[in-house]
Image 1 (tube, rainbow, N blue to C red):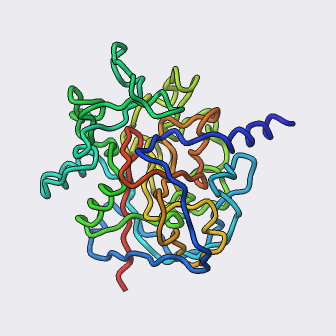
Image 2 (image 1 turned 90 degrees about the vertical axis):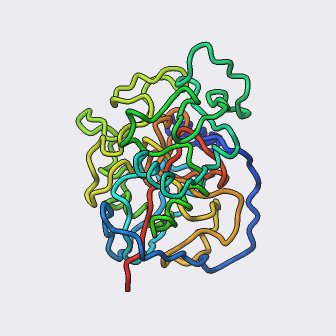
Image 3 (image 1 turned 135 degrees about the horizontal axis):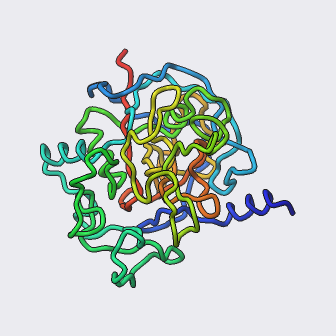
Amino acid sequence: MSSSDNRSRSQLLTPCCAPTKARAELLLSSVTQSNSRVRATEGSVEDMIRVEKTEFLMGSEESHAVQADGEGPVRRVLVDSFYLDREPVTNIQFAEFVRQTAYRTDAERFGWSFVFRNHLPPTWNAEEHPPTLPWWCKVDRADWSHPEGPDSSIASRDNHPAIHVSWNDARAYAQWAGKRLATEAEWEVAARGGLEQQRFPWGSELTPKGKHLCNIWQGEFPDFDTGEDGFTGTSPADAYAANAFGFRSMTGNVWEWCFDWFSQDYHRYASRRNPVGPPQGATKTMKGGSFLCHASYCNRYRVSARSSNTPDSTTANIGFRCARDVAS
């Protein structure tokens, strides 16, 4: 068996790098239609980019694709025109939402969230962590404004993506802003930036001419991140160059919530026009990967890669951006 075959086989068995509060089997009935899209046309389009109606090849069947995630088959999808935030929602933006609404996030209501162990003091007693994911620590009073626990703050991270934000929280923000969360198809066509069947928003080479274009893990996961890309945690939303459509931070940095319920195979039978995930499920789709993604473990920082988490899950590597429909 070749090294690429070994890599592909290992990806079939490798879970995502983001923990969940609970995992459950997704039970689906046989369907042939997409779930209904939620529409939103009231929010400001400032700092959003309009993606025109287009067809594109969604998914991947290449050797890096994680078959168990349902990355394939490659299929031609039609997406109507929409707007998408240029960058993920930042701490300063989320803070304004909280200031105006007094909203309490799921992490604040639960009283804890998951923090990556390397971002905690060496003396931290990391006894509580998810099974098979010992690098995640359950930290009391960790939340969006205290990313590493009560003694931390976002004082120097105004332009970093808001994290420890659940799907429920992301939806609440989007509704407040007169927007919505993007469907997986909308997110992927925006991330591809007009390129067809390329791994990344800029092409198929991870570091063209040795240049880092996204915030992921370098070194030995999960023990030592060399930070060759400039960061060992989240990075500012505008830290790297935009893709051809003008979107930034589409891969790496933080996972981004999508509107869709997650399924490994629903898309095989659903509509190919403005597709949306199944009408019900246990977990919501996430795209883009995060600063914890590494080729040896979670090679999901490719534009076709996908993962999921329960709607109430919060971690230090999950954020979001908003979408909006084009008013007719």
